[in-house]
Length: 386
Image (cartoon, rainbow, N blue to C red):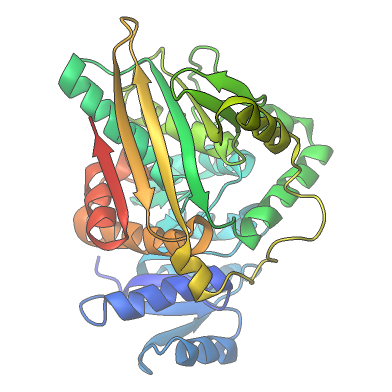
């Protein structure tokens, strides 16, 4: 059934939502039917004028605590992009509305316990309605999800099978995390303090693969010297969500990476004694301490976004000591500039390139090659395997 809009950007008055709307306006001045949604029509109008979007871009009033408004919004769209987080506080009714109305859904979620609750509650409904629900469509976790997918495709082509051990090593990351990411972390920790079942999900690498548990996985919590990169590596703050999404992709693809697949993510700290000291210092950092960094709704300047970038190395290791590699790079800061482009292109991928059955997916399992091609062509990412 045709919908009035290809894409509705819900949360367009927030910092990241505004960037998504701005990207759609500038990159797709024609050929894409899109609208902006949020609580306040007057604020939406201000943002529309601020980003220079056409005056005929439709504005839609919808509120996370008004189920009727969410359902009405969903019924008008092929895809709803939501940047309204923390999702465990503001996202549950929207997922339910999308699952019920058969509307595709994309978010920037890095909250695995909430994601598992949504899988349990709405996966079967989404399968029946045809709703394609995809979490984590920003820096967490698209570069990592598609990086592993690309590496394993190379491994299968070269070695006849997937690499049983894959290491992700973040070599460069200039630019910070979003204020929404910090708010989500705090909300998750608050919820975990009230419910020990949430702690179990947070610490389980297979929390998003109901009914499947693979082999023991590295925790990535302590600094170590990694011979694979010849440097000291430190814990990576986004590993807890990325690794779960990668394992869910493997699960949804029928264990394409193998039932014995082992995966971890760490950040390269440096060489020698200085590298060791840096890794130990990184391991002690509490990202939630103090009031530094942007608050939800805030973010870096355009200059800072444009000067950001990242470089991520994936290493696939085989029992005979052979290996394959994949390098993923992005041309903007990860938390805002690159993320806003990725989620917009993921939405267009669902509108124009990929159908697929309903259910709760990952970017890699549902969009895979088509999304990688879009990101390479439009969003400043590169994927190099060999």
